Image (tube, rainbow, N blue to C red; front, side, top):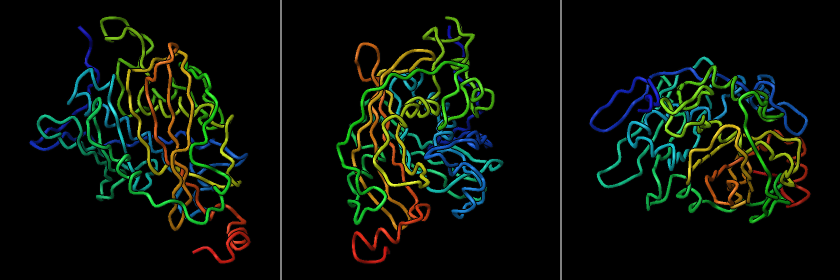
Length: 322
């Protein structure tokens, strides 16, 4: 008999499953890309109008795992999907709560939301199991996107650009590079929802798969681990942030210290008043070449963080950016 996946205290109402208030930890203060600090660094974030270094979006996915498991059981770890639009940033010390609205009878997709104590919405989207036969939150967003007009930072990036396949692996004590300057072991010491399924000391009595599985928030780290080896031809230096993210397990879970291959494809380009966005779909393959998981990620680059943005817009398009 496997141990309980989580001992998280869940409040159940007729309409929803609600997790406890948690204070996620910020672990990316030392993150670098483009040879400069990122939005998770206090000084860099403050220059761009944020209070301080922001908590990385997928950190919040951990708080939904006990809710998905309560609803769907072991299958959640094998074919669960979280699809989220990040709506406001979260800082270390702030408390957040995960809410999962129960699906309608006979359906396998439902709404999710994360809120702060003051009611601010951190993210909203969908959770689903298997192929829910209706579009996820981000599939719906993708279908409604307006194409990127007057690109400056992303002017050389093209839809359908695809990276080489790269081998990736995550061991317990492996630091995951400049983008993720910490190890799985360090993350598990502070993760908001601990589980025996994530532990190195697993045996058949505590884990149905008999080996440690990678938490969903750390799948984002695994999938991005070698992304710097195939950078997009974007202009920089500039600061980006995750604006939308979907992680879908197809033939999960994914295991610690097992080798996978990933490839990334640009599937859309979009923009807003403040950002230019590249939407990337990552496909993850096991040793047999089977797709075991996918990630859809909107990396939004802040126009204000690219120093020559206005000058280059004027040169390219003959007008000031609006």
